Image 1: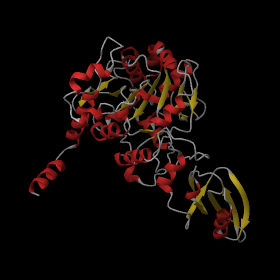
Image 2: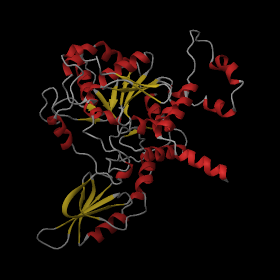
Image 3: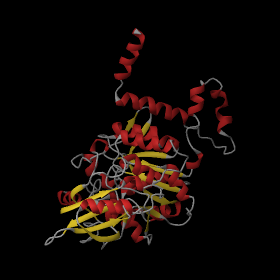
Image 4: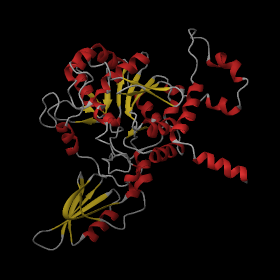
Length: 434
């Protein structure tokens, strides 16, 4: 009993850095050795060492999944957050991907035992007239603060960006040189992806989709977004759509080669743009490669009021701004299903499926496509109509201004809620299922 208490006390004293060291030590040990003989199998190379390894280590050596051997991932991070965020990514989805790098700015540093965070910014902007690219100015920060974000229902599992940190202000300078570093490290990968250190990837879903498209075709994919403030764009929609970085940017090998071929011009022309993902989009605009947008990429966490797809059977590829506990919940959801089976209905139920609605929100309206509209005496009657209509997922009741009663709209889509004085709305979460 005394020994047990002593061990428990030692475990509680482990710092996050010490824990990361243990994880990355295992990660380093399972990296296969590099050989000039492509026909030499990993089993032949490791047979001598494997004979003396315990069973647990032999099990870990199979952690890398060959299904992802043609995917290379770059994770953007910084010294302020890397030690808190990277470990859970490694322990949930990244341990399956052998081809990956960590990228940052303001000096390289090491996580654990040998995992390098590469400084892709210092020295990269010498030809642009700026020492290290352009940091986010006060004016650019104001643009970000005005951006509309989905309301978060449960903030304890959501990452809130620190817009005052040096890493965040210098984040725009990482994307383009980060892709170059990723290509130089893995020139033969079929697909390249860049994410943030608070992004979760459903790898099986993503690769299932990528298997249907040709990596030898220039493809630039992600969640389409609009911007202002770069390339003299004054109004949202006037500039080219770009792939939102936190949702994940996916580039085919053919598109990457085009980007690298135009690297110097891209770096010179857009080094003052306030957002790195916008810079990537502008570079591909110049290369005549338009974004391929997909509903699978999400710029918010699953506990936000997302723009949920109408089809609950559609599959998510990513979620953004997740804290470690929420990433663990996503992994648990994946492990409870067959590979590649997680769909939006499952994610929605894990976050919102508390049973059929018995209450509603006041001063809230839900926009989106209407299933039908009718006049009702009150919100209770409106809710009853939604319950009777099997396709109804949500409803809104707007009181008449000059008479009793109001207009009831039934909706077959779970959409954002917005403030609307006097409006009453609700949802039937159990109906958003595949």
